Length: 270
Image 1 (cartoon, rainbow, N blue to C red):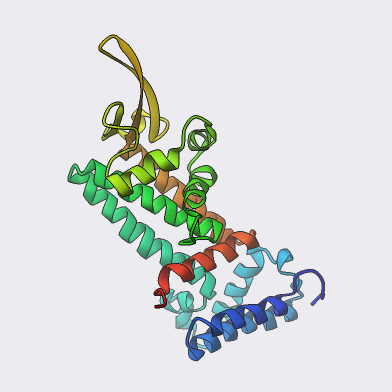
Image 2 (cartoon, rainbow, N blue to C red):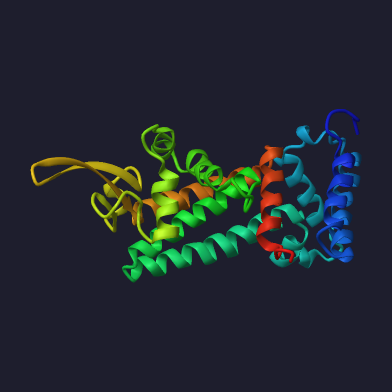
């Protein structure tokens, strides 16, 4: 293996040190053992040791090697055994999105929408947006980072209309939406001109929008939060985020995800 750039061996030592401070010894042994298994194969296959040069193709080739070298041919078509051969990182991504995002988040929102609980659904979506944004930045739960986390997911994964909302100087979407719903159970801006709506998702291009409404002869700029449209865009954004994580080309994105996930599943110390 060519020793240049960011060495996989160097990263393995850092990963082992991080694990030793958070999980049990047997877990450390398992995770590091599986990675060393990959490194031994990579050296024999001529794969570069610089992790920046390791591609998705290399990972897939390794999985293929593991599956095709099983002594029992019946295991080759056993999805359970194939799953056990995957890297812990991929397993973490799959489990997080399978259980927490599609299981808990989506289920909560679908139940609230079916029950007509529009404000409750909007509150949940705003909080979930901040959680996924915290995984994107790696600053989940850190003091003073809540707005950055919320806006990170909007701008990076939910599309151009949401990016434009974030950069509007006269509008603080975090304060109006997330803070209002969490702290006051309503959108900020007073009782007049602010509303959570349950229109069809394809009626709008963005789940948060403004419209001019005439009231008592005056034109009022009103903010609307469309729960179905926002939920539709949120799911698309979560899928984009998962695809980027699985592609595993952005080391910073991976590092932030694992850091944020650790904060999410580790109980706070007293």
